[in-house]
Amino acid sequence: MASLKDIKKRIGTVKNTQQITKAMKMVSAAKLRRAQDAVTAARPYADKMMDVLSSLALREDADSHHLLAERGKGKALVVLITGDRGLCGGFNTNISKAAERFIRANKHGYESYELLIVGRKGNDYLKRRAGMEIIKVHEHLVGSGQVTYPTGAMLGQEVIDLYRSDEYDAVFLIYNAFQSAMTQIQKITQLLPIVPKEVDENIHVPEYLYEPNATEVLQQILPKHIEVQIFRSLLESAASEHGARMTAMDSASKNASEMIGKLTLQYNRARQAAITKELMEIISGAESIK
Image 1 (cartoon, helix red, strand yellow):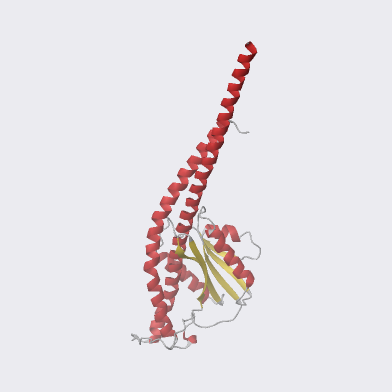
Image 2 (spheres, one colour):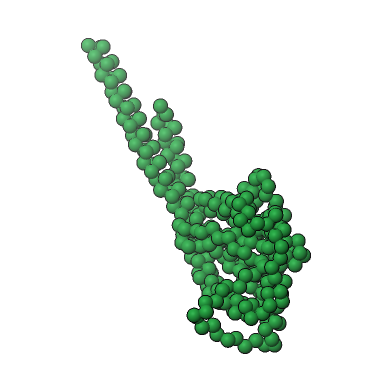
């Protein structure tokens, strides 16, 4: 049985840990509010760009631009977005496992896959898995948690350059989409070649006027679309990470409270047993004197 000193020391340690988890929860909650606002602001822009692109692409020949043209089924690139830090529950593990399942299942029939990973945790998980070919890892790309458009544009241009080199026949994007602080959805989307969204014939599609012409606008909007989609996925992932960390730290704080309660009860029982034992020794000593 642990001594009173050991139990008291454990109670102090758990209390210190609880202070840390509560502080981390508050920091993540503050960051989550900003990240959630950024995601909410970016979604309508990204969706509207997809609508305009789809309306334009459906009026043009699919082979008119290399980002639209279908290729073979050789090698595909998977862009995986994870975090650089832990202590956020299953956030990083779940998305890394989703990427591994996607590659091993090979549902799209490509001969091989290579990974471009954003975030240290995704690399730490997948580099130990057999058959996972990692060509590049971006660590600390988001920095202190603030996602900026130049970051998304830089990553988008890198992906476009890799695709233009004709080394890959497709590019897939895997990231955590933000639903709520407790819910993140692992999303897998085809980034390249761009697949225009099907337009319902029953829904009126507005006619757009293009200057100087539709082909020129298409040449400009397609790369921008890739940048915007990657920027959005970075925002979604950042908000998901803050939500997951806030939830994990809240659970850790509650578990610490429960542990402190159990240890305090154990301490009181041990103290009561020690006092009872001392009383019994005093009484026995007094009886022996008589």
